[in-house]
Amino acid sequence: MEINGVPIEDTFAEAFSMHMNRTIITAYQEDWARITALEATGLATSLIMSPAEAGIEYVLSPEDSPDGRPGVRIMFATSKKEALEQQLIARIGQCILTSPTACAYDATPEPKEHYLIGKQLGMFGDGYQVKKGPIDGRVLWLVPRMSGTFIIQEKFGRQKGVAGGNIIFFCSDLHSGMKSGRAAIDAIEKVEGAFTPFPGGLVGSGSKVSSKYKGLTASTNERFCPTIRAKVPNTEVPPDSEFVLEIVINGFSEESVANAMRVAINEVCTHEGVMKVTAANFGGKLGKFQIGLHNLFS
Image 1 (cartoon, rainbow, N blue to C red):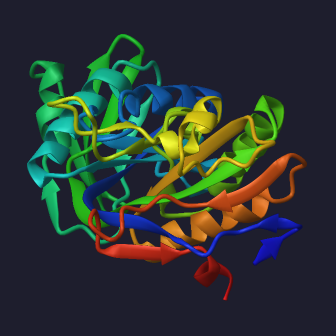
Image 2: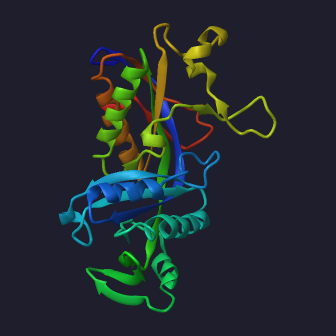
Image 3: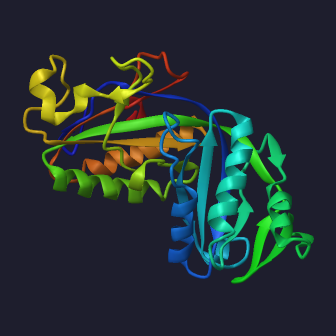
């Protein structure tokens, strides 16, 4: 199978379940909402060594946001549901409450349970906080701060989602890789229900779930490393490829992850220098979801 002359390997991305929340950040300007979102989703690339996986899902127009201001939807994911509540308190409290003009609202579509994040963070008001609502179905806490009132919804939800969808694409050089990769991330941001947790959405250090060193649970996936392909008998890197990237995609459902994978593949295959597209899997040992690349286009 080929798209615009780029071969798409007949393989699958292996994904697994995680606990997820969707939060809306609003601010006085869209760029400031995005800056705040980047702070709130920091150190959240992979559970290999991060406390959560998180990223920007979707940019909202003022007409679609809870308070009529520019907004950015972000998503958080953890392997344990108890950790999700802890991450919401820490990230909203340290990165959104502290951001001038920024406010936080829950937007989890089908929550299995709720956490009283707004009530807990409202105590920062030291007794001056005020509970309001419900307003448009939301109970809110108004917390005074130097840059004006911080508005936060009382309850934030948790639901199960799917993590680990991915594509890997081989490029002729750095320029073709970064140009096609960043374009793919821009395209994924238009897909509702999915997000990319790595820096700028791109993975420059794809890993395998093993290591020769005791105590390490992951290590570089040498089959995809151009600089050592001559030393690796089972290398996947084509002879003329000098740059390989992965995009990891999480989402609320297998469908949303698959949609984002399809969009990403379609986008990278429009760029000169992209030579082949594949995906990472571990033979079905890591997760119960197997998203076939060819099935995305059937």
